[in-house]
Length: 322
Image (cartoon, rainbow, N blue to C red):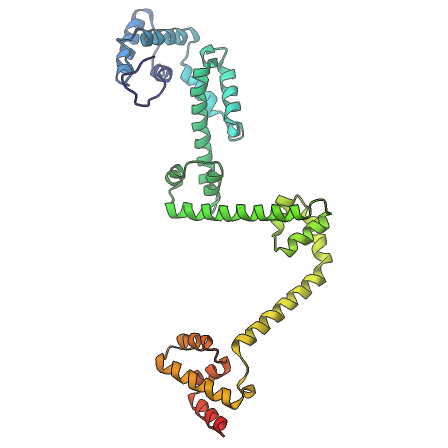
């Protein structure tokens, strides 16, 4: 099979079979058959295949026409029907789906059983899979359709074009997927730490490392009922952990805010008052004042008075001076 150039184009046999689709019985009648072959040969010349001047290509066209007349219908009609009947379940394995299509058509069209033809049918099946995936993705809510195509390794440019999304949106979903994959990998590592232990111990270890129930089920293979049972048994322990965390947070907050004014030593109070006044000379925006006061370790109680009741600040200063 020869071509006029190296430009990628449809396989020659596919172009031949497509040219047969619209032929009428009159086109195939004895007196018109040769004219039809010559006309199609000229048309195929325009596709870049040298047919009228290449004996091999013209012979392939004649053999295909002979098969078309023998079977009584176009090969492409049978092939299109077979591919159109494929479902997403069928094309999950495109090699198996191709074998199914070719096997079903092999009796009528034995040439499809050849390796070269089978490879071309595989491309058609893969295109059908992409079509089905995109159709499913378009009907899915939120970002589920984008996720489906990403997980099926559809090319980014195809996802953007097919779903009408931006590059930024695809990048955002990709980042979320990568984060989820990293979390799954972390959970797998945690499960390896307790390999051989009971489900209860595994769940406790995962709870201790803040793993979501969904991942415990999906990655750990542990039932939700087992997870709930461990959670109930640990309820008091978890409550105590929460209480301790709340106390620690409150303590940390109190330490950050500093003592109430009544507990501040006079000398320290004078120093804080001087500091807050310097800050208020620099800015009169409350947010900025509080930020700078926090950076200078001035207690919140002093800052609150300075902002809400400056006159009281003067009085506190007099009292501190004695």
